[in-house]
Length: 106
Image (cartoon, rainbow, N blue to C red; front, side, top):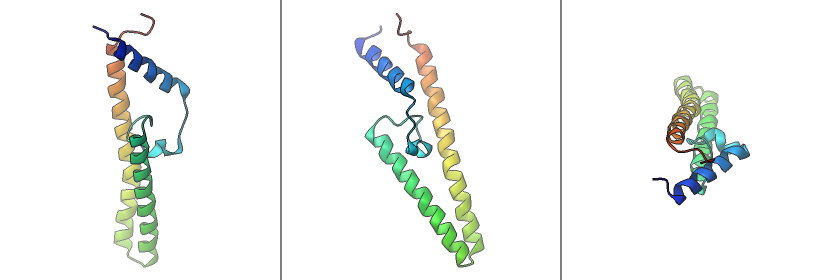
């Protein structure tokens, strides 16, 4: 049975999707859209981690530790890719949940 709270939640999700407001931190967010303050904090943490890894890779290459520098660069590449995969998985999960709900016109 569809309750009022589910309809309100569905309407809120639809409203958030329709805004299409892109945040600079959305690249580093593991979720498809940043909706809560906790999502914003997690995205800021991953952004800071990325920049720390990037700066440390420059420093290790400057001090001629090439093996460690290449490994850290690999981690810098792997971090946004893994976040992109997790965003894709979460969007597929929400699409699957949305298909199970009734349309808003009902």
